[in-house]
Every structure is written in C-alpha cells, then in structure tokens.
Length: 399
Image (cartoon, rainbow, N blue to C red; front, top):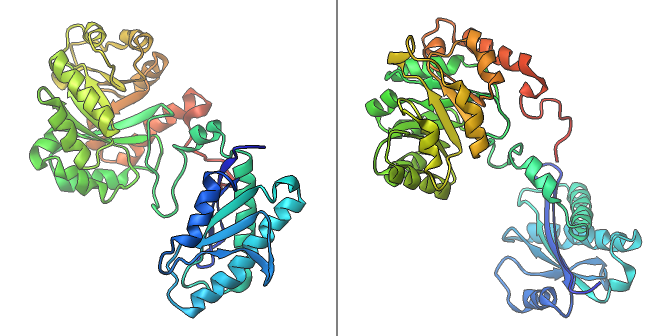
C-alpha cells in the first residue's frame, strides 16, 4: 500500500468524559510524515504534542503523535492527557495492528496524527480511557475503510441533528409537505396559530406577503427565535431587483424566498441565481401568469419550486391548473406546489396529480381549532402511501 492518506473521526461517550478523535494515517515519507515532524517542531502553547505510549519507554507502532484539542492550562489536565488519554490511544493503535485493521507490514511505513479531546471538567479516568480507546479504534477503522460512503452521506445529511447545534436544518427532500401560509398581519394571531400547530416534519411555514409588508422581513428572524428547526418561506412576491430581495430574506434566516412569475425573465433569472448562491430555495409563484409553462421554458436556470396558484379573488371562478404539474416535472422542476382555496376534499386529487407541496392559508389560520384542521391534511398525506411519516420515526439507534 503506497501513497496512503487516510482520515478518520469518531465521537463516543458522555460528557464530561466524552471522547472526540480526529486522526490522519499516512506514509512517513509523505505529507503525513512531514506534518508528523512539524507537530514536534512547531509548538503551540497549551497544545504540546506527545507520543502515544503503552507505558513509559514502550511506544505503539505505527508511531502516533497526540495533539490535545483543548488548551491545557493546569496539571490536572496534564494528568488526563498524559495518563488515561495517552494510554487509550496507544492501546487502540496496538490492538488495531494485532486485529489486522492496520497491516503489520506497515507499522514502520506509516505514522498517525491523532487530535484528542479531553474536557477540562473530565474526572473519571476509567471513562476517559474507555471512551478514547474505543473512539480511536473506530476512527482508525473508518479511516482505512474510507468511511463514510457517499450513499451514507447523502442519506444522513437531511436527517442529521448536530448535537451541539441542537436543531435540524430542514430541506424539501421528502414530499409531500403542508405549507401553511400565515398572511394575517397581526403578531399575536400569528403566534397563536403557530402555537397550536401539531409537531410534524411535513409542515413548513410561509411568512405571507401582507405579514412582511406590515412588519418587514425582520419578522422572519423574530419568528425563527421560536421555531429554530422550521422551514420558513419568505413570500416576497418579488417583481424587481431580485438579488436584493433574496438577500433581504437570506439575512433574516429564511430557508426559501418567493418571486412572482409576473416578473421579467431577467429578474427571475437573477433571483434564482442569487438564491442558489445563498443556498436557499427559490419559489416562483405563477399566480395570474397567462402561460406559466412558457414562462418557465424561457429561463436558463429553473427554480427549485414552482407554485401553481389561484388568487384569492379568483378562487370561485378560475380552475386550478393541476394539469400543468406533469409538464413542469418533465421540464425539470424539482418540486411543484399548489395553492388557492385548498381544502381537505380536493387535496387527494392534488396529490394524485403530482403536487409535492399543498399550500393552505385561511382554512387553517382562521380556524377555531388550528390543530384539528391541520391534522385533517396530515391524515390525507398518511392515507396516500407509506412515505408520509416523520423523518426516522422508527429509527432505534443513531450514530
């Protein structure tokens, strides 16, 4: 095995003895070997590197240097690093060789750089040893097996919740969704509605145009304080200066922003490009656009979501344009939303026509029982098939 440059990571245990190992394994005569030597020659206060030893005068092989992640400030911390953590890393490396994870003929060809976390409040040496031993072994195994595979990354990226962050950042990867349009320009009523919504991964929140006009885009940030893991759409219905309005929504932590399909092709293209640059979703609302499919065909880059929308003023006279759903799908639009007087009795038809997002406003927001009316739609989602449930509802163990 030549030109080895393997990276591994593992986090195990419970605070304050929790172990977090980052390591690199590679050829002693290559870049990893150079970094190994630099660790001893370019010292940083409080992060003094040390060799992993099983006992004094008995280092492990491959040669392993430990670099403390946390600044060491007193002798108590020194004892944890030079005691339980040092032994744990050395023992894990030696056992990995014995078990064949590290090829025995490579012990003098490779070196290992291990970055080790020991919390300043860690007290229990047995836990420090156990957690760091297991984390180091796991990190080595992962490094030499090229973990994680791309399929796992793609599968986990929208399911994961970072333990330090404490909330999940949602994406629209698993339709159908119920988009609740909050249009009423009254803060008290808005929070009353939101408080009654049942918890569900299927619910996304639209900050409606009247609400934004009344309070400004800063209301999105105010809303975010009480809904950290919600998917929030800023319905700006942009008609001009697309880049500027995308940035306004982005700066207030919106996950998506809406442009009117009545805007010029240039405005739409600038809007979509800026949303992509900012990493948020672009929605194009085709309300009152005579030929929405033709409008979309003119775009160099398609939005993530197209909304087929009947305006409130035409709900009783205009027909829903759900026949266009498949045409937009064939064009390459990822998600299709439908809006305009949507009620439970028509929702199954919309879903069967291919709608990914059902947008509902007054039927829920003006209801005397917001939770009950919301659950009406969620029950319809459930009845449509097996992919309706919340994310990882039946997951027993999570890394």
